[in-house]
Length: 70
Length: 281
Image (cartoon, rainbow over the protein chains, first blue to last red):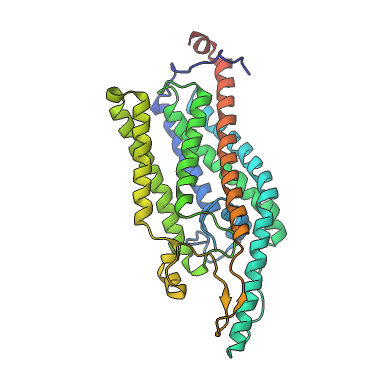
């Protein structure tokens, strides 16, 4: 770590949109898919049909994170 | 720094936050979840005994167990917590990247601010209307409605924050930064309050209202026999309270660790590769 005050501000380097778009888009997609599988899948909706393996595996976390569960 | 660096650091910080939240949950969530499941089973047995006494045939046979309780309470919990940490770390990194260099805050302060916004919109505001609930609190029949309503609160909170930021930025030149932040905060609270007033409480859902009259939530009431005598108690309020306090603590921990670790990682990287920027400011 640097000493306090050595890094005060990083105002010079805004990230340009063009190069970053693929990274940001894939991060959003992967993030939302993960969020969906841990929070929602096989409750109200289900991607893999009428099974509940995903739901049952992450069951406790789903309750604890505040998502609706049975 | 390019987007790649931010995204990868988001994943790392999110995973670390998820592990911390997992350890916390093992100690503070599981006892409440076990108590809730014991209540659920006891109540199920009492309900069946009532039905049999009323002349119904015994149902028999417990619910089929797809994943054992032992796995759910340890590995499953861990996969869920670390998984959500990575998911939130990715979304966090995107929001951070869009703001980095565009606001006059050093990275670790901006990172904590973005984490606070995530906690507020993705968890805390929805919690006020639809709080986290342990097993046994929440009817199977309403899972569709509950999911839709919960997501409406999450998305609504994000929209409210976006509107609040736009409003604050619009008035900043006229009223100054402090007053603009207050106006933005008031805007967020007002919009969230309207949303909460408009959406129905879970106890008001048709099926629940038909079963026991409209109520605020789905928390099980005492079970009574036809004569009105209580044969099984309502859900333990202490268990519910402890579960919800632990849930809030775990989310605060998750977002806090995510913001702190991410901010530290970004500042370390900036100090290494862009010393001129760091020294110049």
